[in-house]
Image (cartoon, rainbow, N blue to C red; front, side):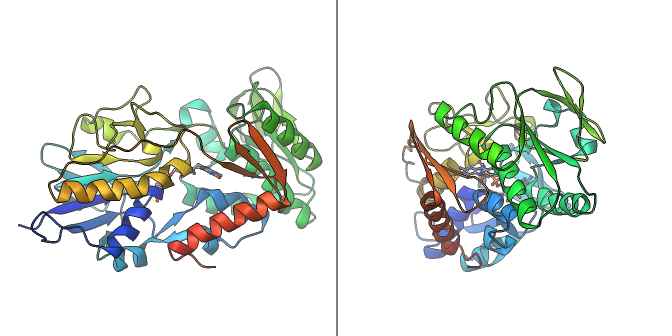
Length: 375
Ligand SMILES: Cc1cc2nc3c(=O)[nH]c(=O)nc-3n(C[C@H](O)[C@H](O)[C@H](O)COP(=O)(O)OP(=O)(O)OC[C@H]3O[C@@H](n4cnc5c(N)ncnc54)[C@H](O)[C@@H]3O)c2cc1C
């Protein structure tokens, strides 16, 4: 009987798996091909690393997305356009929001995180959230168009992580390019901008925020109202439009299905990228935590997990032992500052310049070209 692999989500690791399957199909130990299905709600995968460049006006959105359908087609993979909504481990089936139940022998999950609504009361009703990214793309354009008509008004980005700061700087650049009188403010928390990176990065970002006329508010946001952001330490901050770039949370259904998860609900996986509780389940990217080698939730690690994941899926399909995968300890961070300029961070080394942007642009475009994105 034909055996089945189900890929849930077209995330950064799974696009690598699809490309690998395009080069060589998945086969069992006597050479019979497996049937592979991809479940993804959108026909494209947004590459978030280029999103600030899109907001700033340096890229068209088509340059920032990987078309999933042709990638699946080239790999002989069936594409089901749906959200997975549940998993029944005993029956080895996945439920979807289009009513289709999909059986599998092996399943791999790369669905990213969900927005953590609990951290910011009122955000669901009154803010544009970063995730799902496809919603963000539509909602940010609507917000930008509305504020462009509104004259001199304040708009707020809540979140001092790399995503929040890059978006604030990109939006400021866009507003300048379009000569809009938008007044941007970034509520970054008391630890300052990007506290997980070396202090030199924070200092350079402060410089760029000041230069871009983004007001930096080093306080926590306690909630969002229709026309204000409530600061933990003071008065409501008037805000004609608010963008929430605060934390990510785990999607609930993997834990509800009975998969082992870490303390925050992310799928616990071993050194083979397999669930620590159910060896026929693989998980990678932001939705998973390698329990012995935890790493930051970042696209770099999701991309890097693609080749070892593809390799281990082949090994298991052919009834061979999987190989250990040790993720790199450090990742290169390239933070866009609005104009075609970026800050590069490698461990404690920090450098910036237009050349860093050109380097980032080259890396990003080369990556996207591998998967058939528009040039
Ligand atoms: C603005 C911004 C900028 C960033 N810049 C960088 C950067 O420069 N470098 C970096 O390393 N990281 C960056 N990040 C972080 C990066 O986006 C994430 O770490 C990365 O997206 C994680 O990849 P992933 O494959 O785990 O998940 P995702 O990229 O979120 O992909 C998950 C996929 O699964 C699909 N999916 C979701 N739910 C379901 C479901 N129920 N069923 C089926 N499919 C589903 C989604 O549609 C999506 O296609 C940035 C994030 C943001 C928001």
